[in-house]
Length: 329
Image 1 (cartoon, helix red, strand yellow):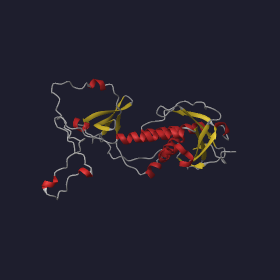
Image 2 (image 1 turned 60 degrees about the vertical axis):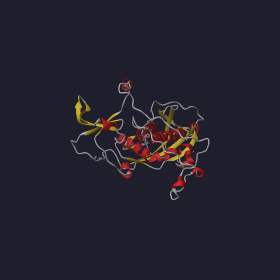
Image 3 (image 1 turned 45 degrees about the vertical axis):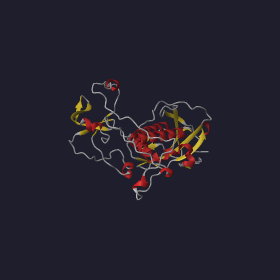
Image 4 (image 1 turned 135 degrees about the vertical axis):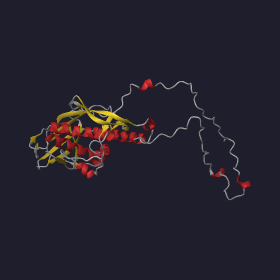
């Protein structure tokens, strides 16, 4: 048995099983992996259709060599192994690549994509040993073709449980992101009573239609086990009362980012990006850059150089009310 004649299946819900939730992210993952390999080889590459198979570690047609390990959101650290299909070559851009190096580039590309898409990376680390020679492995065959028509077929191998683990975390992270995007309900202002709408009565206790005489439109009496609820009016705190101690928050770290501009690209243009591609942004040369704290714009400034590092000198600060506004995203 060889890799070329192995029982490869298309990557779909049937072949990936519990790992099928990763399929919607595959176009972005493939683009990130191709970009990483292209940058390393200094040669544009494309990645063809991924196929899937399973085999016990020791039963692989050629040895699976350890590359890197990863740990996603506190799960057990998992290893990654790789092999090259001998029926294909081992050169990209004229450079000879080993299976371990290509697998390392695959994981680095996936790490960048996961951080961008889900806010969590893979936590890459050193290689680890396989749990057992009989350990079931998930195999991904990635055909890589350079702009010079050099062909490499990478066999990317993982513990069979990894697909389900990553998929479950993707679903959880997407659910958390969805919940975070829903704004919390507005609280009533201090000094105002909260308005409660009367619940819709069941049909048996509904009031008479508006067209009936006023005498007949009075609401029917409520059942014996139902009574009106009266809530006290909310009042403001005394002006001399204690204030919140903001000192408790002074040690919290916030992510600071400087944004020089943005643009929108169709997916076809994103997938076509290669080293040397130029993306035009929506800002003119010399315009102030935006300073964001945890994704919120809070100031603008000018780019400066401090010793050998870039920095930014703040020139304008967003007003406090605007900074705290939910619409300031």
